[in-house]
Every structure is written in structure tokens, then in C-alpha cells.
Image (cartoon, rainbow, N blue to C red):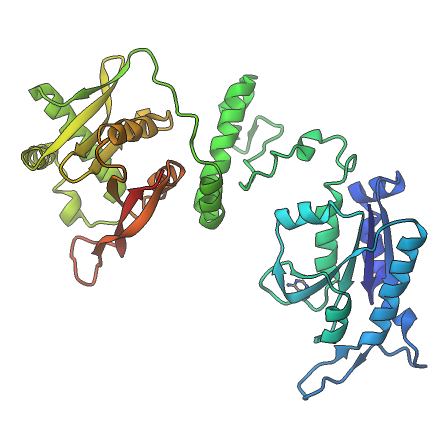
Length: 408
Ligand code: ADE
């Protein structure tokens, strides 16, 4: 691949591309990089590259001719090497947001030319005439496009074969899977009282991979809900966790089972409400009250099921044949992260074959559950209830209870 940077600061750009990993790869000939001085293409004595903007306003604008001539020179150099016409990218704060997907796309070109703006901007006509696309590296304004062009160059060049030779894993298509990276640790094993997560010391690579994948998902869900939502949509759960021996679902019938369901309900609802409701409500979540509520719901047509692992109740779910609704999907804190929630939800859905689009509700603060539902093809279908502290003394923060509908 050949990268050209058209800039007022070619030395700055060149020194970056000569350092560290990229510098070594460049020296080995794994890519070619050329930085061009726009000023060299001016035709005035002062070698001025900018001019006042038409229509007034502060700042100066890079005028078209030197940039155009520089780009023609780059095109001629590429043609002389037998390369196709380079793909031309202008770096401006008004461009399309940059991300890894764009980096992957740009990495497919044989030649990419990055044009750095400076001052207040670039004459729009040269962008129109030569630009294949305009890219911004983020919602902030830089004094020039150099740093942006280096960000693009770095992220594109690291994808070239051989550039990250020691780190083959990074070349793997699945590496960037739309999730943030899991946390990394190196020696010492305990640093200032902080230990490395024990799973990383087990040598069990299946366990380590599972732990890292879970960390990536959890981080992305909390730090970048936008990315996580997209990831959930593109990674539906198709491979359901398998039912294990000693694991089953039982209809709640006996007194003991009602007591187990009430305890699960109290614990589960407390966990989802703890952050968003006041003690006025939380204090009502006793097993006795929960049992009374479940029995009342049973009279209204609900059926409840308990999930057992080796004879121990560790999950519950409720279904209503009359309305096609699912409710009270809870897993004990110890049993979380084992796929029991997903299994119970599928179980509940299959109990309602007469309802192709069952519904359920979930607090919008319960991002963990929302993520699971999304991956299981449940989609928002309106707001059921609003809990507003201004009107409701039991609400600690403004929370919405969303209705979700199965769209699988
Ligand atoms: N030039 C000035 N600000 C920029 C940004 N955010 N991205 C790309 N180029 C820029």
C-alpha cells in the first residue's frame, strides 16, 4: 500500500511514520509513505498558501491551486508506479466520523492520499474536484488536519499484512468485532495490593477466552451503549446455552415452591430496583409481600416456573396465556452469567406458542437485561410506565418501564 500525506507540515508527518512499529514496517517496505509540502506547489513569490475567505469572517482559507497541483503530482507518481488512481481523503472537522470500519475499508485501497486542512479550512471547490470522501476523527476542532491524517494513516497501516507481525491476533478479522478491548495485565502478579484476576493465571485458555469476551461485552455495555446495541443487533444469540444434566423447569405448585419463587422475586426485584427506587418502595419487597403478589397474579391467569440446578431453585419466570406476556425473569446472583436467563426466556416464549409476538416489560436502567433481550430479538414497543421522582415518592431517579415485543 502507498500512503501520501498532503500537508503544510510534511516533516512532522514523516517523523511519525518513521518511528516505532510503523517506522520498522516502512523500512522493511511493507508500505510506502510520502509526505508532500503544499507550499512547494504555490506559484507566488511569497509561497503563500492561504487567502481571505469570500464573504468575510475571521481566519484564512487554503486556496485551491497548490493543493490541486500537489494532488496531480501524487496521481502522476502513482500512475508511474502502475498503481490505480489514489483514493483521496480530506481531513476536516466537518467530515464523516471515523471508526475502525472505515479504517478497514481504506486499508483495501492500493493507494490513499490524505489531505490536511489548516487555518479556517480549504476552498470547497478543490474538495469537490478531488475528494472521494471527507473524514473527521472526532467531534472537536484541531488546528489542522495533520494529527487527523496520522490517526487515519496509523489505523489503516497497522492493518497491512506484516505490520503487526508479532501480534498475529490483531490481523484476525474477528479481533475488532465491534466491542471494546478487555483489560490486560502483565507482571507483577500483585502490584501495590492489586492482584491480576485469578482466571488469567489458570492456563485454561477456554476459560480465559470466555472471561475476556465477557469483560469486553460488559465494558462496551457500560461505556459505549451505542456500540453495544449495534453489536447485539449484529450478534443475535443463535447458539442457545444447552440445558445441562440436573437442570430443569418446574411449574410452581407446592408451598415450598411458592416460598422459593417469592424469595427469588424479592431478591431479583430488589436488585433491579435498588438504584432507582427509594426505601419507601424497597422496604415493601419482603418475601411475604412478594408471595401475596404472585398469588394475586396467579388468580389473574399467570403461571410461574422455577429453574432448578441440581435440585436447587436458582431462577424463575412467569407467563400469561391470556395476554401473551412474560414477567418476573429472575436469576439468583450466584447463578448469573451461566445463560440461565436466556434459557428461561426461551422456555417462557415457547410456553406461549399461541402468541407469536409475546411482550414483557423492563426498566430502562436494567441495561444488562435490555442487552440480553435485544440479542434474543426482543425490540422496544413503547413506554409502559414512567417513574418520576417529581410525582412519585417511591422513585429515586427518573426511570421508564419499557415494553418489549418479540420480533424473532
Ligand atoms: N481538522 C480539524 N479538526 C479535525 C477533526 N476533528 N478531524 C479531522 N480533521 C480535522
